[in-house]
Length: 416
Image (cartoon, rainbow, N blue to C red; front, side):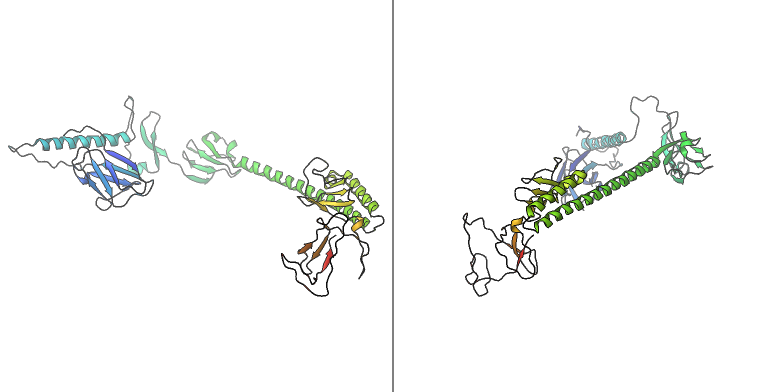
């Protein structure tokens, strides 16, 4: 039969489930196929079987287990370099035998041509290939590079080059040798073989043209030093900023203390609170940092500081509508001091007479853990109405969703 194709190889990518892979060229026997999975040669009958030997359209390679997903599968025809047909004088001459012999020879030629085409070679149009053989023995080729000389001929004489450590004078350096300049830690590659002389740095050495810079450690060190200086300067700036913030906080604390002291006297609480606000405003005028922390007297909760910037946790201002000092928690304004109507000074056991405590400033707290609080809310009472809680002469425990009818026992604290 004829040989109508030059194909001798099929390539696939496995999917982890397929076990049968087709080939579309003729082989004479199962052993004429070499099968590779991910570059690894597999064994006939151990890893795979072959069908279709002798069929001009080819056949299949069937694996015992599917190659793993994404692995390459290569089926390659590789004929033995033998001729086993013996023609005997005066015997019958089979056309099939003659054709098989001719087909095998052509397939061998295809294999040789395929391998030659996959190797390093000159293009067909090159007319001056020059010397293309290497005549050096193994000992002469050791540690050499395969390259072309100045005439374009193939040679194996140039050194590979190795790391030679620190540069030293009176040393024979070969091309591609690598050294370190001990003056600045730069790394150089030798581009011209020579015997060194002079001293480092290489940049000022007479042989500087025989080296090429690979690693500019000197510039890197300079950049590192500059970066370290910048970091130090930044740290100093941060320290100064922290000091300014501390001073601002101290001024604000003084302002808050003044407002609290004013509140201790019911008769002049409003005047003292105004003085505290004036004091805070004066402190804010003395430095921008204080100005950003204490915002002065305002009739309502501000949304920005005095410079138009976002509020920060700890900002203070005096509310002229309610005559109280307020502090910003990071999300909302809350009272930092109470107004005169809710201030009471207690010494020992005293009776609170005609004193009003606002529901947002009064809490019942746990005696052992003050973070546990009971808040009272009077907003549901009708305007102008007073509601009374009467306590019976007995103990009671309050539960969610129930009302006590026989009294309760609590420890009370006023949150200032």
